[in-house]
Image (cartoon, rainbow, N blue to C red; front, top):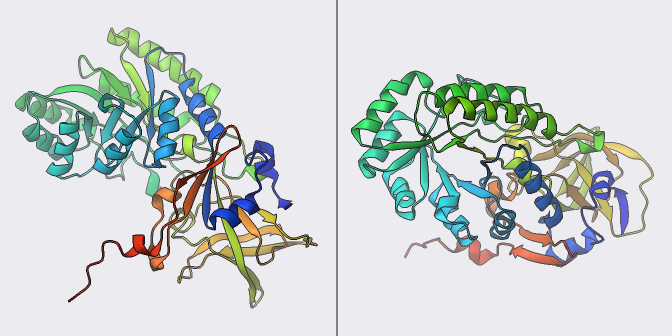
Length: 420
């Protein structure tokens, strides 16, 4: 195997001596590959974010809900949040108890709410109408409410989840109405939560939002927890030495706010965060195979099996993912080129990397897409009737285990009902 361009995975020792070209041959491509050691390190990073004693990390499973992945997160002492009954179901399979799951719902049906209620999972609602619905379904019960702190942040407008242009959360101006509904149904408000957006790389907006959230918290008595949200970013341009989020500095500012609030509130309320990307993104890469190299006019295209059915972030958010190159043959790359890396989906927008400078790439090369563990497989689909990829895990002892089988044609057609 040649390491044609492998700066980041070498630095991380991502493959731990395992040959990625052999993984591609054995399991086929596209293929998601996870590193257990890196996953555990990221869990511990956030568990140690603050010194405040009553602090809980809820992993946001929407980023990556693989069962084995969740089992590792559970073993690291994290709890978990859920966005749907399906996530609750899988999280329970992974060993999470109902009290370790926080259901943060958005515009859901009575059936979904009842599922969480019957499973004993605490539910957060994010509108007056959903609070009313919850009260009718579970009068006398406990509930949490998501508030909009007025501060939003994120790498793309589609992932900013607070501020003036979002569908999420209750505006603080409606707190009087919230209290009326709580009283009407004899509900106990045990927690409040927020989420300002995804992928912030500096902590200013997050710290500011905490201040706003704590002002909201002061308007309610006897809260058991306050969930500050997630959105912790990771550097996607590692090959250019992009700086990571300064967790030490961020933790210091968060600590100051938490201790001060606890003293003023009169109790050491539990504080929670709900990171997804920070925990899952860097512990996974996506392997693909180059099947065609061509020119259209003066542009060179590298054609792969990495369509947007496999990794949707570039087409949805114009997201950047670093690309590395591995080669089974002894052929050398004699030059660097500007190429556009594309997939096999029948759409012109099926672009993985536009006009990227890379070493010369040949057919049969194995491409390695970095930082693919967050919203990678979780957002994959069967578009064009393509099969979703397998997932494998490199254990801490270097053993490689299959943690999800590749789809087959039977999976693809399982729920079709032909006409008679």
